[in-house]
Image (cartoon, rainbow, N blue to C red; front, side, top):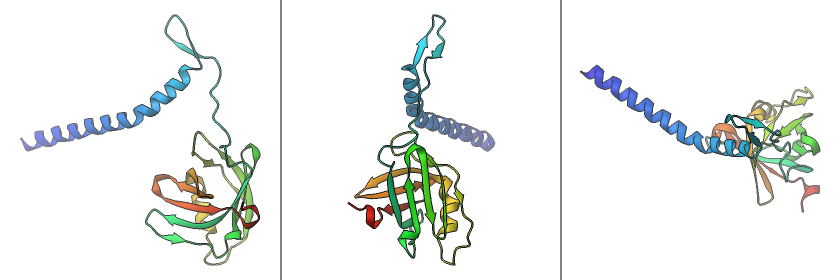
Length: 179
């Protein structure tokens, strides 16, 4: 009898999980389908054919041509890390989805894209390979670079958020770029 109740409870929980997941994904699916519907052509048989591709913005509005220096990193566990010198940690968003960085004693570049408002994703970085001194934030930033997924601009600062509430990098304009 207790085994039957346990199986029923597990089934109920599984159904709730499926329903919860479906309801969370439903708005996303609607947006995707509505977006596709505007660019499709319905045939008599009921199948849709794509008239033209739907383009995602390769570069978010407001980031192209901007430069930033690191103020601090706030971890998801409320830890705070600050660079010894802000100017050693910079990001420059170029035109066409290119990014140039200085991460302590190394410099390099890569790409960035945006799939929508406040969405940001960086491609792999090509960096010089100098050994940075102890206390550097280099290793952490390079390790977390591919997990940055969104951005917000507030009070003249740029906030880059890691996925899964992993933390937030706060940047400010460098002194020469401040308005």
